[in-house]
Length: 606
Ligand code: AGP
Image (cartoon, rainbow, N blue to C red; front, side, top):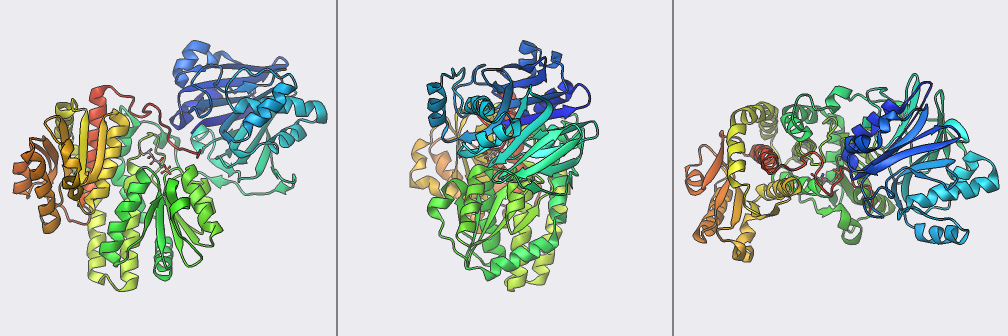
């Protein structure tokens, strides 16, 4: 959504503060700014554009000071403009804030403040807090009290960092529905939306929970409950991610790096807690229903999970996308809800879990980001261990989640007795061999994938089609292609095509098929029939197929050929190729690959 950051230290912190929003830019990047305490006020420099662009315009790194805040924005309220960029100052320049989230009652507060003569400079909900602070300080004469009393006037989900010229070296920060984590350094202390902001400087983190606020100085951190000011004592956690993993490592884009990291992230997913897998599997068996829930990519991951549980455990697990969960799912104490989320902060997914808990259901989650809200709020959690996923477009995290769902399905089948031990063992051997297969395919087929992308990127309209387990793979592949190329791509079930969508097919509509292995005879045959339906209407057809599938290779105009692969892992291998195809298509079109227009890595608002 947005990236907020604050640093206070014994020496000049501007370079660290600037670097922190460079590291948070994947969270939103339509505008940004810095505010630094000094000379009796808070000096703010901000503008539209990415962090480096704004630095060129505003010379952010020329600022000087030992305490400051920073922000990189994904617009929710108010257009992308310099005035709407953060930080926002109070009228007297004594208070400055950065904000992530939404203040639902900002219009009432804005009216109240304007009636008191306050002149607003922006269209944002955030600016309301800056003026509330000034007004409340005039009544209390105490900054901490002014901060908390102002926070208590707000309704919605938010995380704030505030600095004041009246308290030179103190950061005031609060968490209510949007992520906020403290970094405990040696010469400086940090506050940020996530650990990527300060990982180069400290691995020691203290995660705030909703309803808590903190006052942070260069050598102290005090956490209290917003409601009553009672002290909170919490042990810091150690962030195992290394800073290097967060950087590009020589790749042109984070997306390419993260695609090529997948052999390792598959191994990490295979190494994730077996005890957790066994516990959740036994819960799935005991519960009336286990819903899987995610949104965007993680919704498609959940849909892939349905096929794993159906084929390996003989169980149907309902899937509802997070945004629809509260309105559609029927859950109670006899059920479980399993959330899937890379960031662990997605608003809709967190709202679904909160609803499930309200209904008395058990909850579980598969999450990547350590210390994230979801990872701390469900009864069970499996940390997928994929390392930082910086590209807005999810690749390695999604594949790792699928591996974990496969493990859960295998475990459930084994416990249930619907899966023989030898099939369980054979399946695990295929999973353990997958990383090397992915490495080989990435190394040997990338050139062909790129040529095909270059050849076909001129098509404006696409269908991405798959059947059975290849259907959710097609949905995810479609999302990949559309979100980084901005082409119109519709993912759908291959079997659905003849029930209407075939009307769209002509020479201008490109159809991309994910063809099952020839061993999956019926699935393969049905997919080939769909290819023939398209060809009969003169539609161009390309796709991914296996070397030993002569019929598919003959039918497709162009095919990305894969080595013969066990059906259990073949869909995952095809997804990797589809990811790479999307990458090269976007590269050819000159798109902003790691930060596509209009998007943000973690959507923490409803
Ligand atoms: C996928 O490429 C997108 N980044 C988006 O659909 C994402 O998967 C979705 O917003 C869910 O995010 P989460 O996994 O962090 O909850």
